[in-house]
Amino acid sequence: QVQLVESGGGLVQAGGSLKLSCAASGSIFSFNVMGWYRQAPGEQRELVAIITKGGSTNYADSVKGRFTISADNAKNTVYLVMNSLKPEDTAVYYCNAKRFLTSVSNYWGQGTQVTVSS
Image (tube, rainbow, N blue to C red; front, top):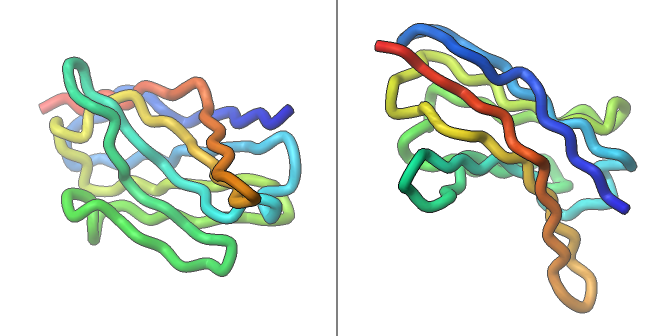
């Protein structure tokens, strides 16, 4: 059973920084893609950033240049460093992992709240 546990959320003022962590119960190298999504109240869940097994990254336009995703295979952990935070970044942030076999297996963490005050 795959478990993803997020941590690092909290309340921060606009312009501040936070670092989110996603710890996997097994080797993150077993996943083809890992990433962060977020969901604000009344909104759909949206992609924030992804990192592939090969280390390629991709970001939503709204966070490019401010957020950085990285992975530490030895610690089975994926990180999201968020700088220059804006009130519109306020959301529940979810860790996601995808495994591509005969079909796509999708795994989600429980989410961590990020609130940016103006």
